[in-house]
Amino acid sequence: MDGKLNLFGIELEFLNSQLARISPNVYLQALVIFLGFCVIAEIVTLILGSVVLRLAKKTKTELDDRLVRKTKNPISLLFIFLGIKIAVMHISIQNALGIFVARINTLFIIISLIYVG
Image: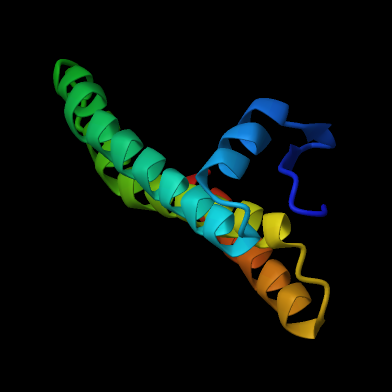
């Protein structure tokens, strides 16, 4: 990846330029990417916890209320694991440790998707 952020093969030039403005250090840029996904995870958790749960409580059944409460944390973890994966990809770690971290992280993403689904 050579320190350039790609998503599904599309280089995200705007994000790359903003990351370069923060620091030329790719490790610091990866940390910013990870922290950004942590913020996104928190925002999604707040939205699910307040807005969506409030809408679910207006229905007659209890099933949707429980579904929102049960999926809130796995969806949050999904964003955190996705942030780790993209941050590691941004650093372009090609050694055995980087490959191991990427595979374990992919496993956690799959488990989170299965749990939510």
